Length: 241
Image (cartoon, rainbow, N blue to C red):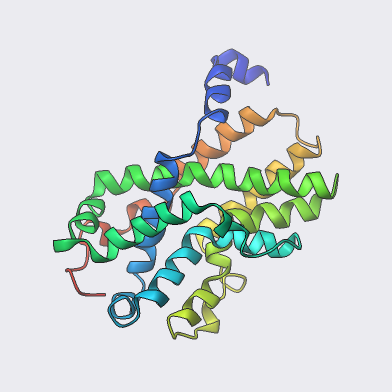
C-alpha cells in the first residue's frame, strides 16, 4: 500500500511477521490464559479439590483453539498434545499461577504494568493463531472463504468458544454464557481478524500479509478493553474468588 510506503513502516511490518512466538510470547499466552481461569468463580476451590480437573481446564484455556480447529478440520483433537514442550511449558505456568508459595507469581502478574505487557503479548499471539488457522484451511480447501473464516476464528478464539465444555470440567453448567449467544470482545475481534485474513488469502483484499498483520496486531493490542477493567487495580485477595 502507498500509505505504508509513505510512512516507511513496511520494514516494521515484515519484521513483525518474522517474530518467533516461542518461547516468550507463548509463555505470556499461557500465563494470561491460566490467570483467566483462576479468576473464574469457583476455580480456586476446584484447584484445591481436584488439581487434575483444574489442569485439564487450564489446558483447554491454553490450547482450546488448536483442539476445536482440529475437530473442524477432521483431525485428531489430541493433536496439540503431540508437542510435549508446549504442554510442559503450559503446565508449568498453570502450576506456578495456582500453587506458587505465597502466591508470588500471580501477585506479580496482577501488577498493572506487568499485566498490560503480558496481555499485549498474548494479543500478538492471537494474530499468529488466526493466520495459522486461515493458512491451514486454505491448504485443504483452496479458495473456500467460509471454511477459512471458520477455522481461523476457532483457532484464535477456541478457548472462549469452548467455555461451556471447560465449565463442565469444573462442574459448572451455564448455557446462557454460550459465546455464540453473547460474544465477548476477544471472540468478536478474532472473528473480524479471521474475515480479514481470509479475504487477503483469497486476494480480495488489496494488502500484503505483513501489512495486514501489523494493522490487525496494532488494532487488537490498542483496543483490548480488558486492559482497563477496574478490578485490575484492585485484584481479589489471595484465596478469594
